[in-house]
Amino acid sequence: MHKKMFLKSLAAVALLALTTLPAPTLAQTYPTRPVKIVVPQTPGGASDALARIVGQKLAEKWGQPVVIENRAGAGGNVGMEAVLAAPADGYTLLMTYVGTQAINGALYKNLPFDPGRDFVPLATLATVPFVLVAKAGTPFKTAGALADAARGGRVTYGSAGNGSVNHLLGELFARAAKVELVHVPYRGAAPALQDLLGGQIDVVFTSLPSVAGQIKTAALQPIAVTSAKRAPAFGSIPTVAESGLPGFDVNPWFGLMAHRNMPRELVERINADVNALLRQPEMAERFAAQGAEPYATAQAEFAAILAADIEKWGAVVRASGARVD
Image 1 (cartoon, helix red, strand yellow):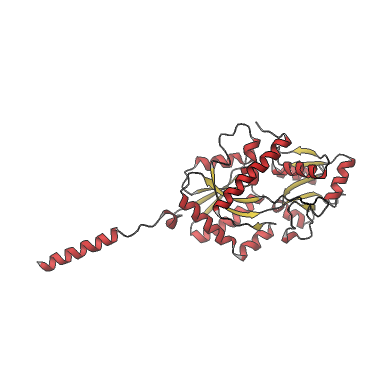
Image 2 (cartoon, rainbow, N blue to C red):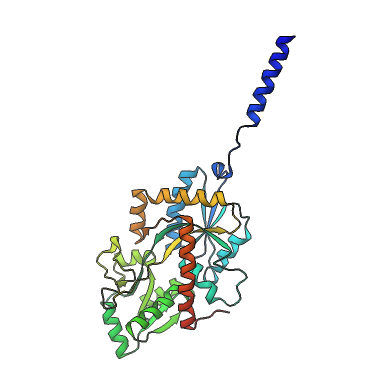
């Protein structure tokens, strides 16, 4: 009898011990199913290229598929709305960059959301210089030569649309060089580049990854990169600053964000996982091939960068007079 009671007591103690073990946290078990990264631009651009590189490595790290979904439209707003419409559970992430996140709030008059407040910054991925390009055989061999041509005549530049980074870069360049450039907006960077190749416009400011292939095949002539330093994989392309405009430095960041209601522990988990990947030499090599440079930050640092850029680019938008209703 005593033996049976002893065994029952032992079983009860064992059961109690099992039930009081700490349960795995949400961050420890995440993810348990496929994760989607929404890219609010068309395939082939910098956002898409970086999302696919990072998505593949996160899938390997997490043991779950990471699906890239392109949801282009309205300067990135369609993709951002899709992320906000999904559950804030960490399974729908936003691949974004300074253009959509820091500019659209000032550019679009009637947005149903706030790009700065309705998303939580998760992790920066890379900085990507933009590059000033022209058709092969262009007489504009340097940024200085382009500025000189604008002083003596009409020089046109194409962009992905009013208020896009491509457009505002032209405004910043013209202001720095004290010249006038004629802006020709398109519905996306691809048609602008198509008309550039066809000789309808003179130059385009665009992300380096989006034209890396055409630069390598000499279909496009690179004039200058917009970052303060030359891109390591494209070291023969001078900077705008080197070409007569000292201090010129535009080197947009790209990163991951999510719905602002996403659990804090998942925010920290994804930040840590992405930063671990960015330290891998393989990632640096794959980014460099795109003209990008890994850029790791703490989550709070990313939030501060976003806030500062909203102020900076908002002022540029207002000065340009660009508005989209």
